[in-house]
Every structure is written in structure tokens, then in C-alpha cells.
Amino acid sequence: MLGIAAVAFAPWKPQLGPIAFVALTYSVPRYSETFKGLLGTHILDWAAWLAFAGWLVWTLRSRTRLVLTSPLVLLMIAFAIWVGISAAAAAWAGPPWAPLPEHHPVQFVHAALLLMVAAHVLSSREAGWQFALAVCAAVTANALLQGVSGIYLEGDIAALSVIALSLAVLGARIAPNLPLRGLFVALGAALLVIFGSAQNRAAGVALVCALLAASWNMRHRWRWLAVGLPVVLVTVIVLLPAGYLHRFQAIWDPQANHPTAGLDRATVNERLELWRAGHRMVCDQPWLGVGIGRYPQVVGVNMGPMHDKYVAHNSLVHLAAETGIPGAALFVLLFAVAIVSLQRMLSAKVEDWRRADIIAVQVALVAYLAAGWFISRHDLVLAYILVGWAAALREFGRR
Image (cartoon, rainbow, N blue to C red):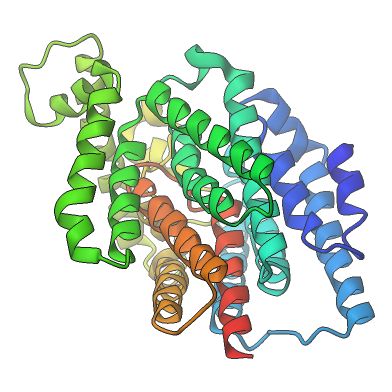
């Protein structure tokens, strides 16, 4: 109720829409009954639509120019339309639709609405650090609710911790006062603890890719890549639990015998099988796919009942299977254009806080895409809000 109440103030402070939605969505475990309740009672639907309506009212009141011609906004509209076409075609010809709650296609509606809002309201320094604070606090609260045993090997919270980490660094740099900066530092430390406690391999890959992306935009790039980055990586490896590093060992060492070795090898083989199943779906339905939200239903037919309700554990494979090659192509294009446009902005002279915004959003998107190679998070609404943030920064730079 607090989240919905916060969204009610969006006509006066429109960034409260995305902030409240993030706080509602990511402060509770995604596989919990609470999250299913948020979807089942349509609280998240109300939050997304109220955020959108509040932004529209604010736009009329402030006479703010719409950025509907932004390439990122247009790509998101095209992607959302294609997802809708794919869903309609599957509903017409396919079996009864029973999507998993945590992968419910309504999240694409939330994504489209909130990307549009973010593209207009996340262009200021104040909105940037406030949104970053909401993300970091929500992910930390999520982990606290689950406890150490709950987040162990949990891919969702691990990936979120890496994505949020770049926003914690941003907040520590651009927050307006020392207490707030100290809070961001504390949240960043908590996110690192979450990352280490989860011991998720996808998040580990995402962290390395995020560090590489951040290093690329350092002022002394090659010096940092040659000296600074190796030091950071060695420090992280030393501080990580030994069990985390052992999880990677099982990939190349069939004789590994650490406590989770059997599970680690099994999950690698299982992912390969799930990717092959997704590839078969794409070959069978290359244009429209099997329908958004249907991969968990169809995979049981392809791989047997033991794999019923499994996801592809790869965002691109999952999306290609469900929406066809055009849907996957639009997804890739959307995020590629966002990352490239952010990189182009860095070539221009911008204020220090805006440069920090650009780098943080770009690093968060890189972390999201890297983690998505091993987990199915094609429907992560936060990622689409980050694309909207990139659009807002781009439009501001053009004015």
C-alpha cells in the first residue's frame, strides 16, 4: 500500500513512479508467495499504470516535450507490439496458456510503460541518485528477507546484486551530501556480501563483464586495464568464499569433488539441453515462436515431463523460442542501441555527474546481458527502465 501511495504523487514528482515500482517488485523474493500475490492481486499492474498516468498528468502540467521519436522508445514500442502479436498468434493456435507467475508476460507491459516514463524523468541528478537508492535498498531488503540460506545459489538475487552494484557506486559519487554517500557505500558493501553469499556463476561472469565495461571508460583506460583491473579481480577472488571458486572448477574439471560438484556439472549439462530445446522451438516456429510465456510448457514436450515448467536459462534463447527470430532481434537491437548510444555520449563533453550516470547505466546493462546468458531474465522490468534512463540521458544531451 505504501508503494501505491507513493505512485499517487507521480503527477507532482514523476520519478516516484519507477521508484515505487522498483521498491515493490525487487524488495520481495521473486519465487515467493508474496511476489505471486503482487501479480495475482494486480498490485504491480496498478503501480505501473498509475506511474504512467501520473507521468502523463505531469507532462500536461509542465508542458514537457515528449520524446516519442527517440530510437530507444521506438524500438521498445516495436518490441512490445511483436510480443503482443506472438502472444495473440499462440493463443489462437496453441494449447491453453499457463505461464509461470515469475515469468508472467504482463511484465512486458510494465516494462513498456515504465521505459516510457523513465525516458522522460530520469535525466536529472536528483532523479538519478533517488532511483539508484531505491534499487540498491530493494535488492538488499530482498536478501535480508531470504537470509543467507535463501539466497545461496539463487540466480535472481545474485544477478540483481551485480546490476545494483554499479548504481551504488553511482550514488556514492553523485549523492548531494556525505550521509547519503555513506549510505550508498554501506549498500554497496551489502550488495557485495549478497553476491558472495549467493555463489552464483552467472553473477560471477556478470561482475567480470561489468568491471571490464567500467574499466573501458576510465580516463587512463590502458593503465587501469593493465594494472588496476587485475588487482581488483585478485582482491575479489581472495575475499570470495572458496566454495564459489570451486563451482567454476566443475566446468572444466570432471574429477572435481567439492560438495556441490555433482550439482555444478549437472546444471551445465542441463542448460545445454535446455538451449538445444529452445533451438528446436525456433526451428519449428521461426517467425512468431511458441508464444510468450509458453517455453516452460513446450519444453516438457521436447525433453520429457521431468523438465516440465523449466526455463531456458538464457534470455536470448528463451525469447527467441517464445517470440521467434524477429522478437529476439528486436531485443538485441534495443539493448545494443542503448549501450552504443551511451558510449557515444561519453565522447562529448558532459558534466561529471552526468558522465557518472552514463557509465553506471551502461555497466548495469552490460551486467544484465552477461548474467542473461545463463539465466532467463528477458522479462526483468528493471533492465527496461535502465534503457529508458539511457534514452533520457541521450535526449538531454541533444537539447
